[in-house]
Length: 468
Figure 1: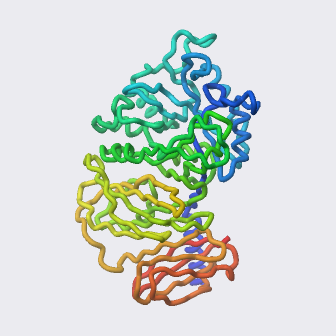
Figure 2: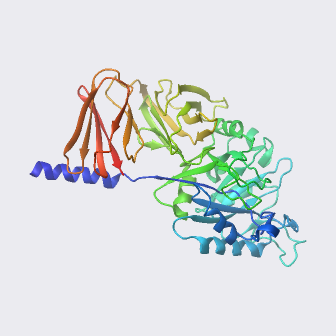
Figure 3: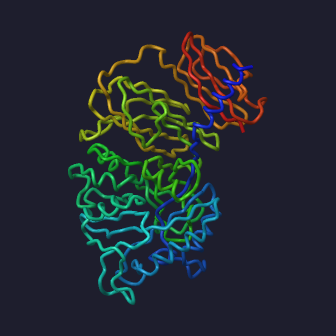
């Protein structure tokens, strides 16, 4: 009885300490009638954030909406933002939050001209701007001053606000005082957390989820990674019409324990997010227990795993792993690829001592939709060497949580066993296999928490499983 009690305690501790991260799908780049958005307000009757949030809550596969109003006026509706509207927008976002859908309010700073560019910023309760005249009833048109073309001081403002983060909006190669061709700056790195995979369609009123943008900022993103920046891959809609969440099915996907402002801001600052053309694809990308956005180190070759789990049952046409050396200036290369599979495992034996390597996953679905993850940064510690065969047995499984079936990929072609253990420590399933990919029916098991144990000879590994 004492042994059973100890085992139950160990299992309970294992489940409690393993925090589950949930997937939330949304967008942080959009506009309303407080600047140059809601352009169809004369026909829809919606011109303010409150009505825009109400519309977004009814969109499919949409958990959060951030409205990032243009930060300056210039002229009426171009873009037309005034300082007093910023506090109104913050209040409307707070009032619209119900616990099941998250409403956020921020700003899009800057102008589009050579060496300038737009920056989406969250975490400030005051408007950042530069206009001192020419704004009816709102001069100066800012609470916090920053010169229109000086991004160095803007990044410093964001860095010094512990709640704030910035993402680069539809960037070009000369934007932000030529950030992409400049030398690495650690202060800028601490302020900027992401680059969008895609942006738009900004000025298209379509609301049937089908209007995908042709923009693709993956190349720009890789340049910043090469220069040493730690950035995630996001996804922007840039709505200017009443089609929040419905212009296309692309989503910014964040991973957080629950849907709160603090958790979303935390996930963005940690780069626990990815950009997806698909509105319900859940990507599990890890090195050991480290997930996308993490920085880690080790003295053995990193074992990388990717799981593509689509809510519609789509099979990934391909999964690729890109890798580069941070700060090298060299473009990353594809180091692993698998076709017609939802899983990929790759052991990178090229990691070198003292260098920080970054890895990211690109998934292409059968319908052409693409998904690009934020990286994991891995610094090699001395001595770097190959892991001895099987001493660090690994496997990946999906979906988790599961309902009726569980897919397990081990990469093992000789004999191994799979066990399922319930919360009391009772072994309720055991089966031997000799193929690398298997499927187990879980429909006969009760809902709850379980352990999956894979054994190969004297080596084994255990992971947590949830059956719903």
